[in-house]
Length: 484
Image 1 (cartoon, helix red, strand yellow):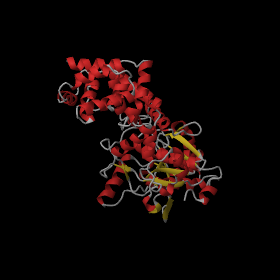
Image 2 (image 1 turned 180 degrees about the horizontal axis):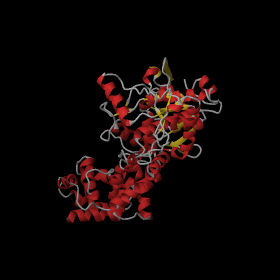
Image 3 (image 1 turned 60 degrees about the vertical axis):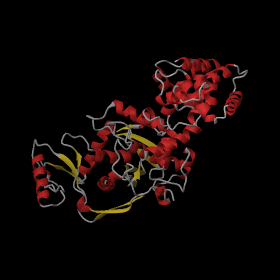
Image 4 (image 1 turned 180 degrees about the vertical axis):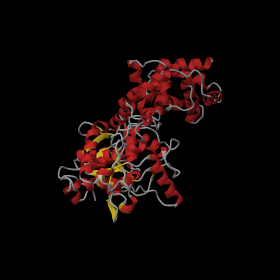
């Protein structure tokens, strides 16, 4: 089941989801999954997917972090509708709503000092009970307010009964109203808090479904208090449908950390060499599934995705599974595209730019390179033999050369020089005949040859190596090895 009919009826303008990251660092892999789930749900229903940058933490929010988030979203192909919204720029609107709540008696000015709050907290700890702010200013008359003393504005949270959320992932979740204290809407300097800003922005942006990590579940109960209070003041305020998704854990079940792969999306592209389609596919399968399907295209994901198939247990991140999935997408990818992606790293490793001929050679080699690689890094590293021998031969490659049958490399160099055609077919036929004539398996001939041609123990197959290097370069490398 996807969105229920009642949900669709409650959203006459269509389904609207949002992703709302804080620009205090990179786009975290968990945030990327949240964005993906929101994007897919909106696209599945023909709705809108909006992006809001929650930049109210002015000390930690940076332009570089904002750009990293936007860059990561674009790389993953998670296009958003309309212009992105910047929360800080809407502070006046947030304060306006706080003023409405204050004027209608749903909020109050609180003059509790930090010392008084600390004393209340200490008392709660001494009595071994949860700390809940019970302000003496909640029902105080305005004339009793002290003059020239800073005050915050707090919401008058419900005191009695229970609050229930019908969460699309967590199911029915109920808390006692007494667990929700009168939280701050406006700080003493007049700036709005996160809790208020989120609710106002979701309302003004027309968000119908709030899909986010389950670490925000407790916030939902507080945010409902604002919505209910505003519903009593003016028409149009609606409760969103909540769907709180379990967080991602490491492969060992512990909280996801850098050692598990908790990196920024840019690191998966630049440092680990992943393709965006592989990252999207892997994130989609972290906590959501469609039967036994493992390889899921973007079109299939849009067609199949629904919130009800998201599990309630934390998903486990496994970098090896991501690498294996990436290997699949590398094999399926266009050769010219992969060559373009590999070029910057190849150029960096060679310390020179690739010219047009180099680029053409890289494209031609891609069918051989990509079938053995799990990442773009492996493709780039594997391509280096095309352009230069390593300064120092791989020790295992030297062992293969030294362990070759006596005279084999010289014989193969001389016979290859006499080949009338340098084609894959002629090269394969020649090498197989040479191995047969020496009563050797093909590997006994191919392995030392590959080592002599590439300086490495691991490379594409010998026929590919010879063909891609060409007659002149191949013979030159073999002769250099013989005289080394």
